[in-house]
Length: 116
Image 1 (cartoon, one colour):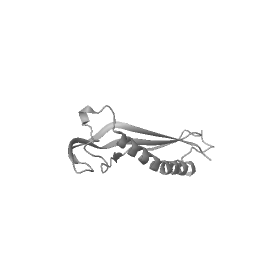
Image 2: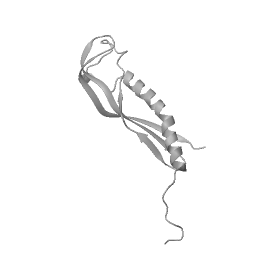
Image 3: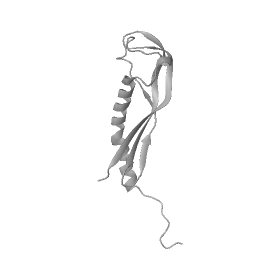
Image 4: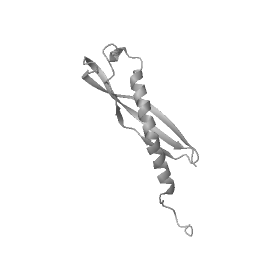
């Protein structure tokens, strides 16, 4: 049975909404609403890699004005976003492993053994 190493990279590519309503009904400016995240699985036996790198949206329904930190005052991604991206990553693992398993049994091109 293969062993997989999973990695999550939350990039600095952010989608910023000029104005967005939070879960408490307040409206804030320059709100991070998504980031590009890279979920990667590596088959540690073969070194084969499968990955995905979509824009992953942030659910703001639990964020209040009291929780909100202005974009220019942030020193890192808000913890609620990191937590959501971590959950998203967990949901990607099975699919990435299945991609690696499918590749292992897929037909591949080879030179004929009698050719030189």
